[in-house]
Length: 79
Image (cartoon, rainbow, N blue to C red):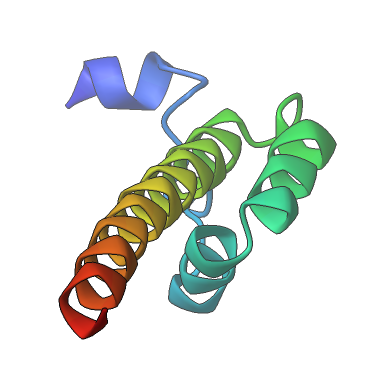
């Protein structure tokens, strides 16, 4: 308990809100902006925004690859 009180990085208010997490996931550029604007004063919030932006970018790449594969398969079956 005393470790938590002496730790300056432990701030219960330093959490990214759910809406901002969703925004960071859906629009990774917004997550990057949140990261760079809050990395000095709220490091946990910045870290969460960065992670959500990276997860969103990764999901977009995977979905794009799947749609490309399915699109190629659908056009080959149609001809």
